[in-house]
Image (cartoon, rainbow, N blue to C red; front, side):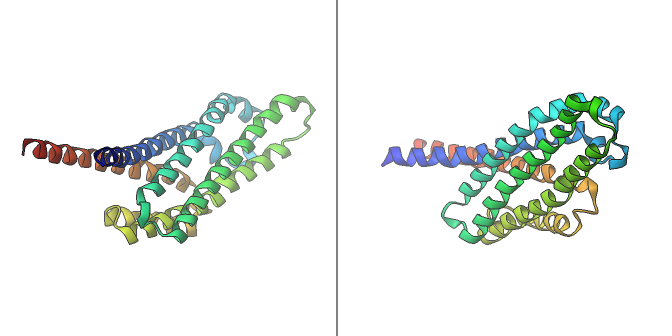
Length: 232
């Protein structure tokens, strides 16, 4: 019986820490990718040309290496976040939350594939292309994914987890309110605010840091209780 209790305690401590670490890793990798490509993801499609492609080829190589690991970290973050709710989770909102998280990773990879295709096409057939139409098309496609569909699915992700937090009081009210506000902004104004794509990694980072701090406090409290029990 005591052994089972110790396993449960270790699981409760490990899960929040795993979520926090995965979320921080996702945030850092995604933020690094977006910083490297800040000019490119906000560039007008008409400005895409051979000079632009040559100037950003190095940054593109780094980003295409980082994105797969960011997606893996985000899936881990999503899975552990759902696990934290345990028996308190609502099946409807949990399904929407998990499904939107998977779709987010798929769109992130699609965006990266489109971005890589731009530079891959240029490297393979630059001398055969008579104009830049294919690069402009790929850039518009890429910006539509990350600046429209990705952010609106991020809104679904945030609103569903915010609803779960409201039902379970798993996080402070201020964090739930902030999640709803940012999620609604994504849902309504994603195609207008081009800089909004940088807010989602920041939100994940905020949630991850909060979970890490909460885990640290709970661990200290538990150690103090165990120490008091041992003294008794």
